[in-house]
Every structure is written in C-alpha cells, then in structure tokens.
Length: 121
Image (tube, rainbow, N blue to C red; front, side, top):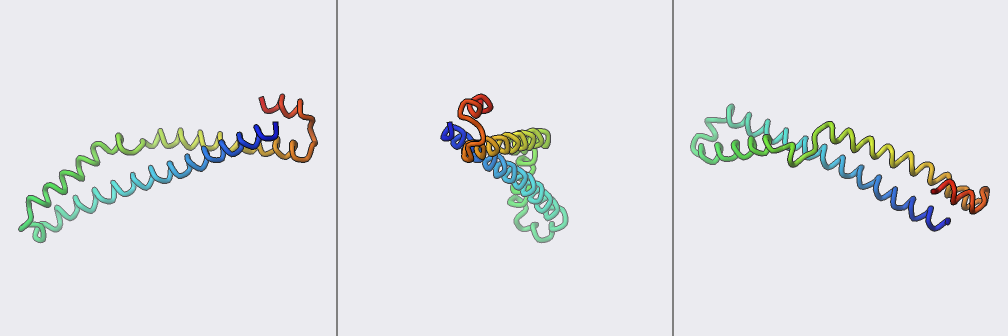
C-alpha cells in the first residue's frame, strides 16, 4: 500500500507541476501577443515615414499581427479557462497534502495497513 500511495503522490506532483508550467506558458503567450500587436500597430501608425519605402511589408506584418490577435482565443486559453485550470491546480495541491499525510502515516506506522487502505480508497 505504501508503494501505491507513493506513486499516487508522484503522479499528482507531476500533474501539479505540469499545470503550473502550462498556466505560465499561456499567460506569457497572451502577454507576448498583446505586446507584439501594440508594437506593430503603433509602429505602423507612428512610423509611417520609416515604413514608407517598405509599405507592403509593413502592411503584411501588421495584417499578420492583427490576424493573430483575432485567433488568439484559439491559440491561447481565455481568462475563464485559465481560472478553471488554476482551480484544478489548487485541487491537486489539496489532494497532494492529504496524500502526504497518508504517506507520513504509512512511513511511521501510525495507522494499520487496512486503515491506510480504507483512507486511500
């Protein structure tokens, strides 16, 4: 039973770390898309003298950035979805805490094997 609790703890920890990294990646992507949109849109308006010889390239770059902005919700999760993932991560952490308590009981033999089994399942 101790092995089962241990492997479950490892699995939950991997899940929690994955969700943490995934949330960070999604937030970074969202931030980078907004920054790129602002920079290229602003440079298109304020830097027209600079872009004038390359007007077609500037228009294409701005159009691509605007298209990325339009399909952003298909590339990056929405704020509501990210909140739901955050809730899931907190549930993983609560479950991990309970598993750690159970693991502690297994390691220190404070509970019998049958009791640990009942609590686990």
